[in-house]
Length: 124
Image 1 (cartoon, rainbow, N blue to C red):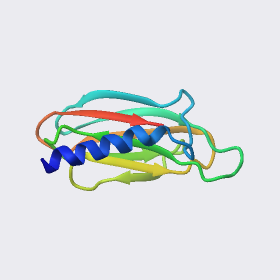
Image 2: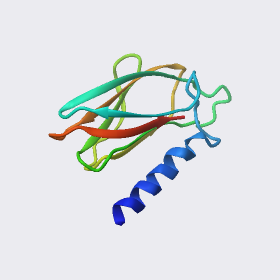
Image 3: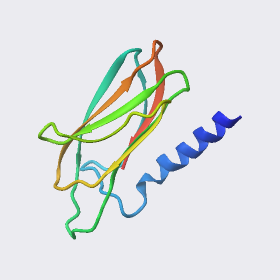
Image 4: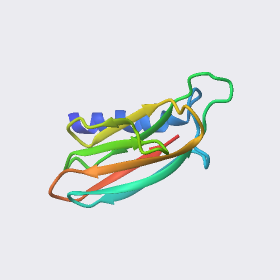
């Protein structure tokens, strides 16, 4: 029951990504489900827009797994520099950062476990 509550809380946070104060991606917010194979990673290239008014506008990416393995997220800027990561144990992962300029970010979702993990993912 506790796991269900955590998943619902994480899902609510994921859906809240479209609220104000967030740096949008070039193509707008997205949600999808994808299986991350055991001991592997999936790589996404997403362009996030910097705020024109110099306000802090956050970019966010979230993963909600099926509970079976540890999932980590790593974010790299266009120069290959790590911007942020979520490497906590478990398969509820969330990263948040302020894009310093409009650029393409590389987001790596890694499954550290020995079984596949069906994950819901999304970004603003």
